[in-house]
Length: 277
Image 1 (tube, rainbow, N blue to C red):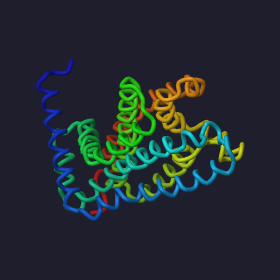
Image 2: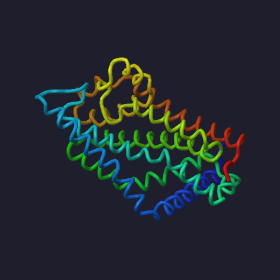
Image 3: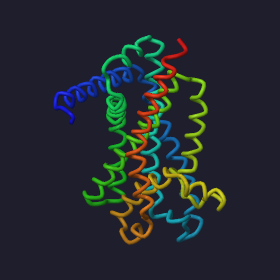
């Protein structure tokens, strides 16, 4: 049974890690500007490309993407791409402390691995909150939905942050314990996201490659968050597209991936420790 004192201690640790991470990030203003601008540039390019495609002829569509909804889907894609920054955040923070020679103290201290996960998670959510709020406002103005669907969107966004945080923790532990494996992990995640269709419909792939997309649980996660907003805007069009696979994949990723990442973190760190000093 979890004691109240333990819960309070974990909360204090999470807030301490959050405050520390935000303080460190705020020192490099140019880096923050770069983080915010890169996804925006990508978004505008995609808006121009899809705008041109869907204006070829009236009623043209790719899958369920069409001239009436592609801006909504690209705004959601932008918010996901923006949130992906958390995946590399653990690596940056761990390597920074590794070379400052303060990482050993953090690992030896009585800090639960879930606390380590959520400390960086909360700090990234706060850092990204302003641009994400702006995206939500623009999407809400263009495609208004009820508070119920807005709440569902926020819940799924939390799931996405938790999943991205778990991926970041996996990269982070190899960055401090077995750094030579990090590029292979990053290549694997790039391929995974390539076939997750964050920025484009699955139909742009040839049928052979669509098979790999449908095997990818991240495709169903990102497709679900698009469809939840679309559900509030055009229920009849969206409800036919949501399947049990969307729900099951999202729940499994949200529950199992953080547990697996913490388990692997402990195993790798216990075996290799901190290397590369």
